[in-house]
Image 1: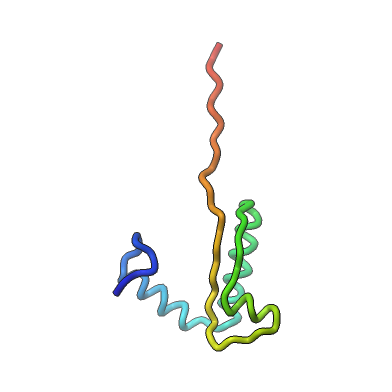
Image 2: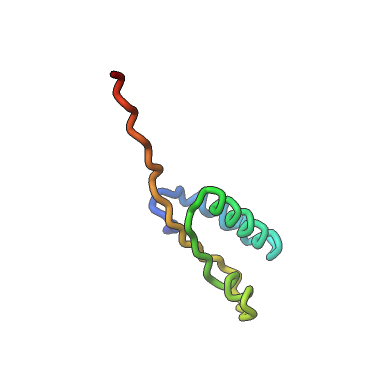
Length: 84
């Protein structure tokens, strides 16, 4: 089985997918809302697409996928000042 991401263990991904498939639409929507709140708190720009986003605009689709694109950047650290 090929994983969605190179750094993901195939067995772990299989478990994650099976858990997601068992969730109701309400549970999936709650997770998207939680993710949205977290990204806003962390000042991360993001975009939600897929059938979940289409449903918000009244275009129902048979698939219930969520596409998330996030602009995650490394944290900028300040350089410590030298002692004088």
